[in-house]
Image 1 (cartoon, one colour):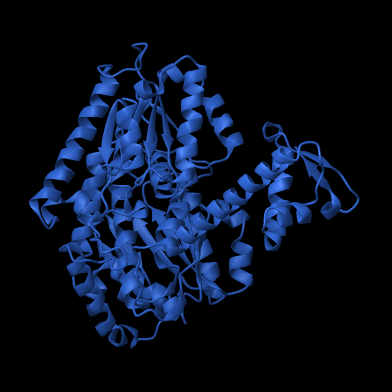
Image 2 (cartoon, one colour):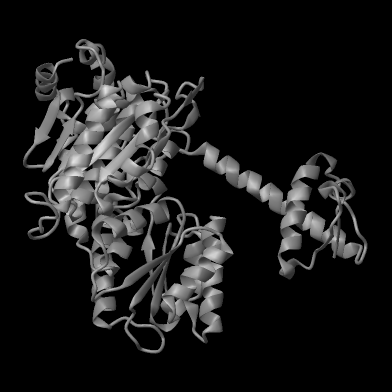
Length: 527
């Protein structure tokens, strides 16, 4: 295709909304001129399904739940007064609590202002707050934020070392059910660290959880400073604009109202029942085109802005947990999903663009371009060129290089990387995911695979308990993994026993010793 033809195609398939401060270019996706006509009926069905969802329909039939994350930024859209009041009350409480923490009206037990914030959560309870923190930065005069986002003891030790003084640290524990083991473990580890510092954990802690949950009960019993709600109609991966993300952001001194306003503006733009004037539907249809409706190509997210570095990680959960499904809504096995990965530009120039341009053509790229380089003017690093000019040049060069080798790409252009833009990007992809799910007839709002993993992990811990009981019943005696698995009545779980015994013997607190043998499977373990 000639440059003139490309320019004409660009003009034809370039969505732009100046009032929204956003543009979407799909011209470098290789769909035919008849594609949108072909997809008109499926798109209309997706529009109608989304309208029903926002009106309060049971959009998650597996769990018989409404799906209401869109109401979080515009409570007037909530289906009843109770939900509307709950949203507005929670937002008011978040702002009040953050103001009182910043002013020193709320302090730790020693009466000193909080300077640090430790967020304990996993998945959507950490990825969203981490993305927003990286994108918008913590205000210098407010609170520095740290995360326990895994059940890795070494990681938690490292974070605690960075925090230093726990008497100046407020901990926010986030878990919808209160039963998520990774978050529970992080809370227990944090509580122990406070106790070792001679501090009462409850006087430095806040819970974000569902009313009546295990965490809610624990927070009440231990007199946490405050409790904020999570609702059953908001899933973890779409919870960033609930207390999950808003409370940490407010404590960091970020403009949470601007984030909400940005999301609200994007919601309005993506309610339009016109494919060519709806940026979220354009994205969903491009995903469908690229993977032939079967997720045959990966989604590579390349934001050309350091602030948006964690956006691809955030989208991994939003997209993959929502769309990675074995069954469709009719119960048919379909194995749907889109794999997401990414890096930041122009770092990707030196990381994996070589693979993208000349390797396996199993992806489509999404470039995120930010027009404003920095606040204020920039110096010239070369005559007539700033660092930001180079960043823009590298983005355009990569886009061209991929197109030359028949690699498809989308470009999303935003004016800046401020709080409103962050809200817009979150809302844009939330709705695109919802649209795409309808196009391929799956439930975007449940996660049976995650639950399966949790159940499997629980089985491993049960086997470990049986192993420890057996070893303590036979002190000083050595047994191989095969012998132990047979002795506990699980001969088919010998591999699980072997992995457990390796781990137990590597950590002295378990009191398990290993006698090394030439063959690892002949090694004997004893208590």
